[in-house]
View 1 (cartoon, rainbow, N blue to C red):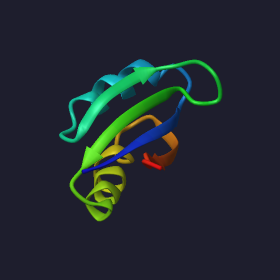
View 2 (cartoon, rainbow, N blue to C red):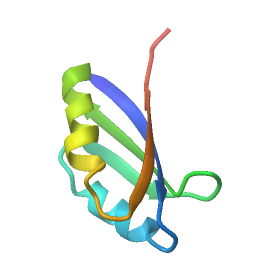
View 3 (cartoon, one colour):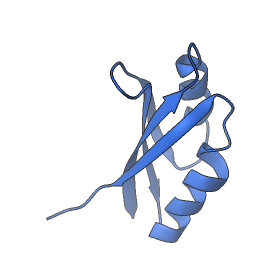
View 4 (cartoon, one colour):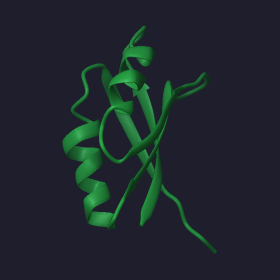
Amino acid sequence: MVQAYILIQTEVGKASTVAETISKIPGVIQAEDVTGPYDVIVRAQAETVDELGRLVVARVQQVEGITRTLTCPVVHL
């Protein structure tokens, strides 16, 4: 299992709607509104890195109101 944090910037006033929409996507563990340089932080998981990439590109980035994403895979050292 591969997990990642997805840091999301949204259009002004769209963070809550984006977080709520993303929280319903299969593979998303948690989606939270935050303050700072990012508006929403998502924790997601998938079976493989390729599947995680598809989740981000095909599902998360298609949500209306998102302007930019940064995916940070979780590593276990």
